[in-house]
Image (tube, rainbow, N blue to C red; front, top):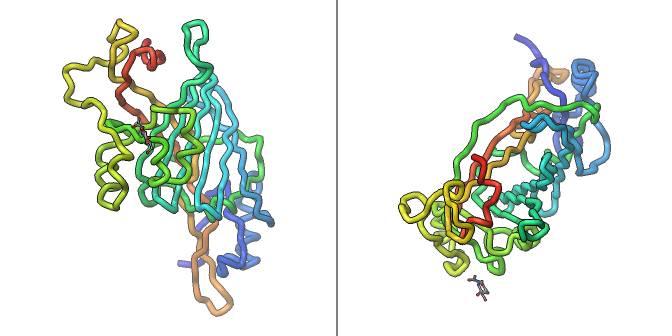
Length: 290
Ligand SMILES: *[C@@H]1O[C@H](CO)[C@@H](O)[C@H](O)[C@H]1NC(C)=O
């Protein structure tokens, strides 16, 4: 068996000196031919990628993906059809991921213009490609509407602990900027807290919320009628398109030695379903119709 796997890719990771084996002109040419419609191996290292994706409600939105090599982080941001701005940050330096939803308030119901929610959790290995690869990602046809190659299910996250904004820098330097609009609504999971405490994070960073799972005292917000009652709120979001894995291609040099190099990405879509305590039902009005 010989040579190259046909790269079924629509995105390429641009080559540079860092990936020595990537430089083979011949294989670059073949990659270019196979993916002629949608692929380009670009020079230069601009770190922003704008990808058009279709959301589950059918609406097409533009997702902005940015890599910050210096801080070793990736951010992803898009606006939903209902006006909610979703931001996701993967902080590889501290292995933390942050989700933020800025939900448009209903002014006629006495709400603020925006309601911010922040969810902080540990970033696992191989959830998303490294920031240095993200910084090299290019697409040839930016107008194309992308569909993720793999659609992953909905992850359930019980966020039973509140994070103190002014101490959150211990978890990730990104939280302060991202979550200041969320105020008190910065949540995390108990299991993540245990991990961070073991690593020496100060206990006063966290506040246990009234128990979420086994709390007969608290109803789901959608079945609570009193606007001022505490209840269990849920919020779902989906990252419709993100580069979740690197693809490798093989090449052979003049002496017949084969080697592999990064030649593209696999894209994924993944949903997240958060459950968390709110002190008043009116902080959870989107939960009404479920
Ligand atoms: C969060 O931490 C700050 C500074 O350490 C403290 O002054 C404040 O009271 C804490 N906030 C809450 C809600 O516990």
